[in-house]
Image 1 (cartoon, rainbow, N blue to C red):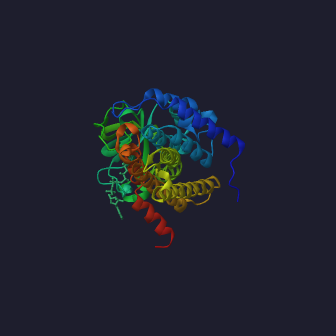
Image 2 (image 1 turned 90 degrees about the vertical axis):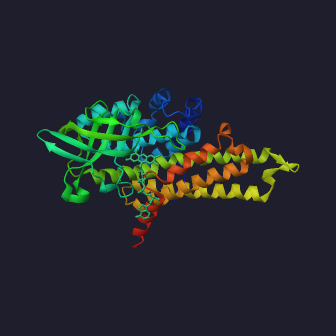
Length: 379
Ligand SMILES: Cc1cc2nc3c(=O)[nH]c(=O)nc-3n(C[C@H](O)[C@H](O)[C@H](O)COP(=O)(O)OP(=O)(O)OC[C@H]3O[C@@H](n4cnc5c(N)ncnc54)[C@H](O)[C@@H]3O)c2cc1C
């Protein structure tokens, strides 16, 4: 077993971390209207928006493990987890399916724009009646000559208010169940497609989320991504990437918060000594470190399996579950150790908890991850 990274991986991690720290940390706004377009472009310039995409299509051509590691650098270096989340949603739930299932014309039209940061991508599958039971979706796409006509509504679309292209999942063959779903790439100005009002939410404030409506939305058959009926396996595959690599960013976030909290525990004095000298504090920090490293190792193993083309669904769920739950606990621990300052918004610690809580919901809830793990145990 080899736990070391190659010198290229180390170099890339270091440059991604230093870029994120120096270029992506301008004052983050709490307003949903303020999606940071300029920083998005900067992400494109570095290559964050196309990490696993081959260079010929405008990306960096990285494998899964290196992609997760660079996402880790991004999450550690950039304090705006909303921006980081938008990058991950764009990359793993929109760009990746285009890369893996797109025809040549689709790859040429979308990948260079999406990787460069010229365009923003979004993924629309969840519906009011289809959340965890996602394949129960009702949006229909009916073939009409050379076109499809889509009708339905989607409940939460990350990047929706700023997206240039939406990957929309719809039922094309109602009697075929899981194999009756198809995916469509729909551009923002297409008649019949409209984005609802962005939600106010507790965290990830610079990552706008909104519902999406499709009313007699007509698209050419060439907008279909992959074959008819390929939608569900395509979505599952993109979730495997997202559950692995996007969550690398939360590993990076935890590392940053742990460093910050250790520093604070060494400096803050009460009763004439550093608070970190109390076991109640130092053991809490030791537990934070233990959860971080355990979650990180689960992630690396899952990515390692994916890079070898091996079955990794359970390992990916184990990693996603461990990271999201560790990130929430990390937010709670950091607030407790910072005392009153942990609760003051300007200090930036309470934000960690607000940004971590949704990680146990999106990309499949913690309950759904436990279901996947249990089913691999034969239950
Ligand atoms: C920040 C954020 C960004 C998102 N971005 C997108 C996006 O870009 N595109 C998109 O399509 N969707 C997106 N979503 C939607 C997300 O995928 C869903 O919220 C998620 O799948 C859960 O669905 P739900 O909210 O309908 O909850 P529900 O499925 O209604 O679940 C409610 C509760 O019941 C539990 N539950 C449900 N079924 C079971 C069961 N069988 N056994 C045990 N417990 C169960 C759940 O785990 C949860 O705790 C986003 C959500 C969030 C919070």
